[in-house]
Amino acid sequence: MLIVIYKNGNIYVGRKEFYLNSESNTIKVGDNVSNLYDVSTIIVGNRTIYGDPMETF
Image (cartoon, rainbow, N blue to C red; front, side):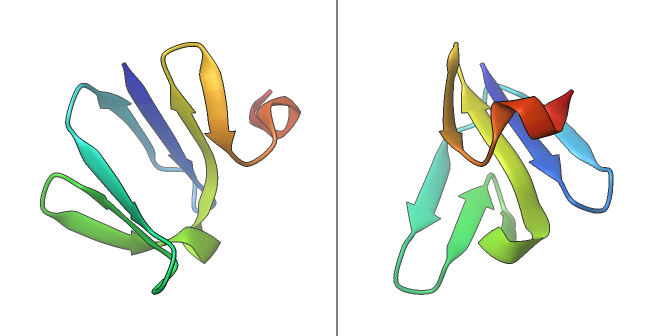
């Protein structure tokens, strides 16, 4: 399970593959590419891989 919480309040919950690009600071989920500066938290399974899990709640 993939959960991406964006700073603008949008939330993606699903099972799509995602790619993190550290060179361009982007995340690609499906066909959607976003700057990591626009992302608050990324949770995969039961692990937070980006951001602060407490910020989510």
